[in-house]
Length: 307
Image (tube, rainbow, N blue to C red; front, side):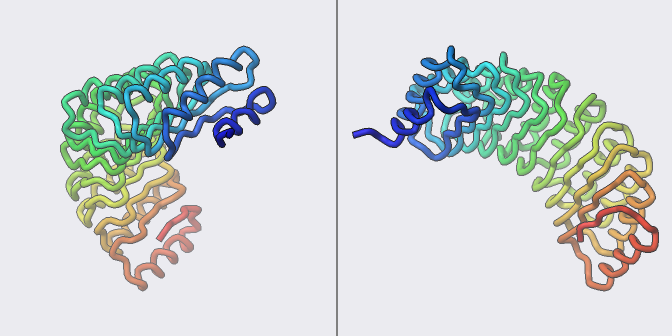
């Protein structure tokens, strides 16, 4: 009896083109073996031109991993690699990443993996940064902590084409942020930085001020769900005074009062470059909301405020 996998490949082989391999929530070994055989068999006919591979929620044995390595070898034009919530040790994870170094990879996702405290973390992050042509790097929900963020910051300078970095949900605070800002402040291409859902304290905003004052590349900054308070806004306002590149700022879901947010909105209007400001889920009562909307209208501002 023919399996669903066999039927799928009989339908695709020789008649259909596809460019994505999605291996999420499946029994890896059998499917990967089928994919690999099909890729190797039909490579010369250009039936498969794999640009992206998605591996999510899989328990991988060493036997499974050799198939992933082989698939990567066949995929000459791999543009996107997504590895999420994998049950594999960090040494094998490093091998997965190292196998991509010769690919024209633009997007690399390695998330939902507990990296904090790993002894081999430095070499793993070094293997990440060796993909120097990557433009978008997602390491969210990896629980790197301050030590891991410091190590990542050390390697970021190698990724000269990086434009987007997502390190949300990584359990770092003031110490990790300081290392990160020191690394990114002069980065030549990093324009989007997601720092949401971490533990940046109120006075940690002093490093955000330094980033905004000394960086003319960053256009999007996400600080949602940290521990920013009223005194944090003074740092942000001073940073905005000297910044001419930022277009989107998110300080939603922090602990900032409406009265102080009003000052931040005024600073954003005065800046003129900021197109979107998210201040939702802070301590804003209805009267202040009305005042903020009126502030936008009275200044004929094009600022899009999310409240």
